[in-house]
Each structure stands twice: as structure tokens, then as C-alpha cells.
Amino acid sequence: MPVQATQNVIGKEVSALSHLKDGSEFGLPLGGLFALGKLLFDANWTDQEGGGRPLTKGTGRPISNGSAPLTGNRSFNRISAPDANSCMGCHNSPYGISGGGDFVTNVFVLGQRFDFATFDPADKTPTSGSTDETGQPSSLDTLANMRASTSLFGAGYLEMLARQITEDLQAIRCTIKPGETKDLVSKGIHFGKLTLTKTGLWDASKVEGISRLSLLSSMSASPPTLVIRPWHQASNVVSLREFSNNAFNQHHGIQSTERFGIDTDPDGDGFTNEMTRADVTAVTIYQAGLQVPGHVIPRDREIEQAVLTGEKLFQRIACASCHIPRLPLDKQGWIFSEPNPFNPPTNLRVGETTTLKVDLSSDELPAPRLKPDASGVVWVEAFTDFKLHDICEPQNAEPLDMNQSVWSKKFREGNRRFLTKRLWGEANAQPAHFHHGLFTTIRRCVLAHAGEALKTREAFQALPAGEQDALIEFLKYLQVLPPGTKDRIVDEKFQAREWPPAWSKK
Image (cartoon, rainbow, N blue to C red):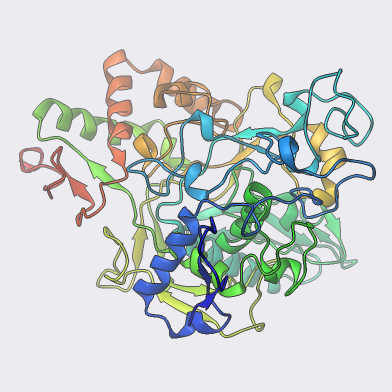
């Protein structure tokens, strides 16, 4: 059962009065574990329970030699972090629950590698925040990557799809013999070709859409892992658990025991065991168990016709070639297991504790939910292919999201590849549109597509104005539904409705 965090709470200002004792997560009912995870997700962490990290960066490394501790007016920095008191502070749209957020909730990825970012040349405080690791002056464009907060609705189904795709690709890799090349295909998605040369080197130069972190290099004696990383918009994070361990430390200064050790205080704030392994499991299950988005289609003949037309155009001009409308979870893939079998080190891994299993179709979790059909398949209507694509204009390459050990050269080379946006819930789950959150409309996102998506954008631009409007109308109604809504296809009053409408079938 939970362990009290402090014996005397009178006068204390803390969000988490208790923490789960490791092992107790297995004795809790699903609804109870989900609720505890929500409490931790919503918690506003204070400096009386370990909020903040005076002596460490967001990477977990010590602050630079001679740098002043991140305390007082240096304890909170919007760019290099800590930058939020709560997960819910950024993931709050719509309905005050765990989607994305407005532009003001954008994060600055890789800014956390600095002690205290500053652009004031008169600031004499010892810090590496005004110059990068090469000694070059930094601007906001080169210090960090601005990112819109990611929506987490339907996250459990998405992670399980990524796991199944990874398993498929690894199974193909295991069948490749020296001198052979094979196509990497899973769920109808083509990830390029992998070759094992006659000399025993793995040639991954023709692999497509997979993070460099999962490929090692284009030629290697070790096989590429081919792990699909569904989190972060540049595909850097394997699991909700890794995402949570990173975020609690970086954004809040809350350090988990599984990453930083039991009874240790590496950030020097006077607190140990700020988040237990069981706590991280609970907050992971909360995110995995969130409801899935749906469709809101008003009972208006003109709108209904526009949505029907827009859906057909979405297919016709090849938007659906990357934004695949639905993908199958088979082999009971809707049973979410924790930990993820592909977790990297410093995150809980399979074999280190008992595996916890959660049925994502359970009615103990918030509706609406996806259920297996008669053939034992759950169809996940997320509109994605889990691949990285070059979607930028040549002049718009930006610093590249990479893990800390390889950032230096890659960060300056620039990034043009982003995970295919999951469009379910796009209309209201992340009002700051596109990967950087700079667009206020879906139409602007469509018109920003370039690179591999250029022909599709041009096909959209070639459509008559009325057809362009119809396609946007279709996308406008991919929404997260109000809490308590049971059905995924509803009308403007959030009541279940028939779709396609009866008149369209005549």
C-alpha cells in the first residue's frame, strides 16, 4: 500500500502526500492505479517535496563547473528548465485533460543541456547558456528546438502498435542471411530495405522512416535494433515510461529512483526517493489508459456532405499514404504490458520486476475505448504510419533532436524529418498545430507540407476551393470527446449517430 511521504503534514505544502511502495502497484485494481497515476500527472510539485534540481541539468548531469546552483531566481527557466510545476500544466487541452496545449505550453527540446539559458550579454553569471559546447554564441533557434506539447489521448494503443511493428521488423532482420537484402514491412507499411553483406556488415543505408537512434550507423557489425520510437516528434523516445522519466526530471526536477537510485540525492535539493518505481508505473498506466479520440459530425446535411467528400479527397490526393487512417492491433496487442520490452537503460526493463498487464479495452478505463472485432483485431484509427518523413522546405531545416551523447555534430546538421502526425483528435487536442506549434489552423499545416509531402500539398492546392474546404471540414471533426462520452462517432450534442448517414447509402 502507499507509504506516507512525511509524518507531519501540518504546514507542509506538497502535492503528493504519499508515494506508492514498490510492489504495491500489482495489488491495486486497474481503476485505482489509473487514479493514482492521474494524481501524479496533475500534481503541482513544490520545493518541499523535491521539485527543482539545484545541482543538475535536465539531462541528469551536474551543472557546469563554477556555475551557480539553480536556486532562487535561477531555479525556473522557460527554455533550459525546470519549466513547469505539473504535467497537466502543458498537457491540458481539451477539457483540462491530457492532450497538448496552447502555444504558451511549448517546450524547448535540448535546452535542458544548459545550466541556465540566457541571451543577455551583460549577465556575468558563470553559465554555458549563452554559448554552445563549441564556444559559439547561441540564439533561440540554435539553443533548442521549439515543440508543441504532444497529445496523449489513445497513447496505450499507439505504443502497442509501435511494439508490434518493432517485433515484425526484428523478425525479418533475423531471417536475413549474408549476402541478402530484404524488405522491411509491417502492417502494410514499408520501412525500406536492410542488407547483410557477405562480409557480415549490416547495411542500413536503405532503411526508411526509422530513427537514427535505432540504426546505429549505415554500416555496422552489430545489427540495427529497428525499434520504433513513437514519442517525441522526431522519434527519440521508445516508451511512455521513458517519456515520463525524462519529463519529471527535466521539467519539474522530480527524480525517479529507477533512474537516479534509491536514497540518493544527485540534484542536491535535500530530498531522496522523489518518485518511486511504482509511482512511475502508475503515471505510465494513466497515460496508456487515456481514452481515444473520435468524430464529431453535426446533423447538418451540408456539413455531412462536406465531410464525406473530404474523406474521399483525403484518400485521392494521397494524404492517406502517410496518414494511414487505421492500423490493426492483433495477437491481443491491446493488452498493454509494463515495462516496455524495448526500454533503454535507466528505465525499468523486462526481467527487473514482475510484468504488469493492462487490458486497454477494459471498461474500468475512461470511454470511449477501442474493442477487438469478431476476428480478434483492434483497429486503431490514428492516421499515422509511425515513420519519419522529410516534410520541410530546404531552407527550413532546424537543429536536430538527438540524444545527449551524439548531439553536438548532428544538432548543427539540421533536422527535416518528423514522425507522421497522428491526426485523431487533431482539431482540438493540440490547438498549437504542427510540430512547432506555430500554426493556428489545420489549413496552414497542410500548406506547410514540403519535402516528401510536396506532391500531396500541390495536389491539395490544385483542388477547387470548395474541395479544399471539404477536406479541411473532414479534418475539423477529428476530435477528443468530452469526458463521459461513450461513443466515438457523435453529433454536435455528443450523442451517438449513424455514419455514414442513411441518405448517403441510397
